[in-house]
Amino acid sequence: MIRTYLPVLALALVLAACQKTPDPPSSIPLPPPGLGDRVRVLSADAMVVDGQHLRLANAYGPQGVPDARCWAEATAAQTTLAWVRAKMRDAREIAVEPAAGFDEFHRRLAIVKLDGVDLGQEMYENGLAARRADGLNGRFAWCEPISGKAVGAPAVSSLLD
Image (cartoon, rainbow, N blue to C red; front, side):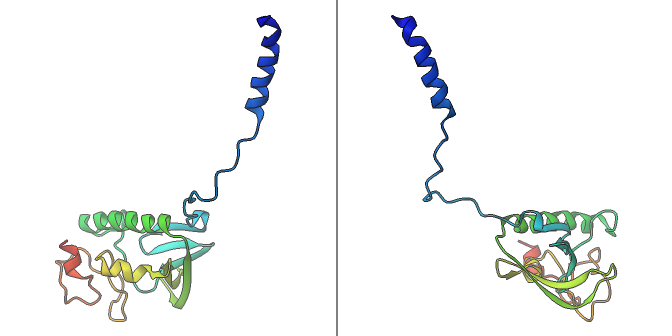
């Protein structure tokens, strides 16, 4: 008698395994969409957004190897790059506001906002970038002794935290 039910039981198990699982309830929050393939971070202050090569118009980030001029700048570049990539990963929206001009590599200068917050300004306020200013000719001197009075210097208090 058990042998007669065995094929029926096997068929029931196969059919049960093939049934589509229900979609998750809509009350479960889905993870944020992120920016996905829209953004590629090249350095802390340079990126490609929707195919456009951009450089932050309001912040100079420290340069990494091989362009760093000292160990301190290279280390700061790694920290800043990781911080920017984390911001990009967590962001839901990005807005690009073109500014006047291009950098030395012909990248468009722009203000980049992540979820409405100015990335360059936030980098500056956190001591991760120097201010891009008219008086600042070229790169910021990351390898010089820290001076809060230097043109474009990041906030020294944020570096001491």
